[in-house]
Amino acid sequence: MSLQFTEILVLRGEKLPLCSLPLEQYSGSRDSRYGLRGNTALERGYTGQWEICDNMLYLVGINGQFDDRSSFSVRHVFPDSEGAVFAEWFTGTLRIPMGKRLKRGLSGFDTVYESDRFIAVNNGKVESEWVVTHDVPPVDECNQSDIPDFLKTQKS
Image (cartoon, rainbow, N blue to C red; front, side):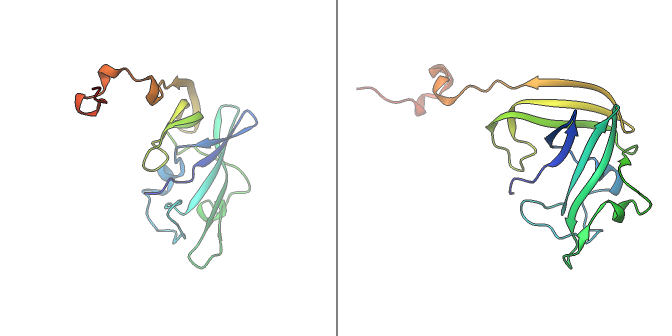
């Protein structure tokens, strides 16, 4: 599987990658019910743009294409919307990767970075926020005792 494009989250005026898919809770599982044109790096066929404002999560944009190459937007999911849509359907944890990539995952959303910011959301309202730091030492700092004997260099 190719690394997947992340969603985008604007938080405190900063544009950040978002490794969560809040729209999936609204529109159901990752199916092709919209007939979106995907590719190996965007299997879901769209990218969502999100913003947290006054501790509330909003969908502010969607970029995608239908199979006929016409544009897919927020209006296709929320026909009555006239701007940002309050994500009252979403309850879960948003993950924002931060820092350098330490270990590549299969999809990108499971890639390990130096740290992750998590934001707990309940019915579209932010409840809490925290950061987790990941400490993965470079290979050259591994303790020799952690390496299996058959991999150790033999000295004559």
